[in-house]
Length: 244
Image 1 (cartoon, rainbow, N blue to C red):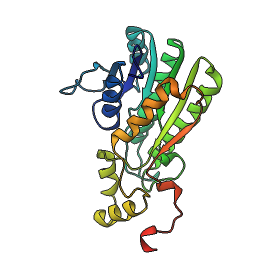
Image 2: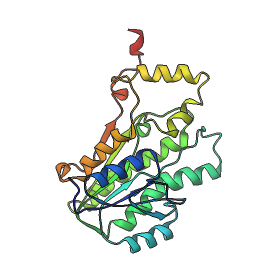
Image 3: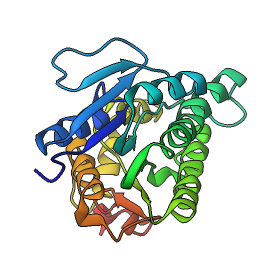
């Protein structure tokens, strides 16, 4: 029960990585509030609020209502599979609004209210450092998340720790959407698997396990850092290991 007595807010807790983090934190004794733009999903044991994180007024109102927190996990995110030339103003507003401004809104509203010694965990991506094809706005938005993480750690330590988790290919709907862009999705999937040292894609629980550690007192000396959870994908050279 590493989070017993702690109150946590996890954005985007309906499914995927967010839902795995919600379930993990509950199992470790935390009181959890989560949110999304729709209604609460079935079977959710955490408190649910309907919230669009890209709306600064709605975020501020929600934080006033929720009150003191010990942990914030900024997980809410969206993806648009387009190049810069293909992207529209609406695509910009959606992706940057949720992935970048949404995290900024949550952090700005929470920092004055977080308990001393609190932990902010931002879900970044390996895509902030190595660009995935046809994901221009997503890649750029995650680079913003990494820069904001450093700034919060520097400006608000020692009262608040702030770190980012950088997932690789995790088995969610976003993974399927990315492979659907390939000329041969099955071949692209096989090739991607061969580039993972563990020979599998990640599961939401893999990210949740890292989030639990960062939220706990075990990570008290970790701040301003980026923790890659990608099964060894970015450790390898560009050569396909399956050919050697």
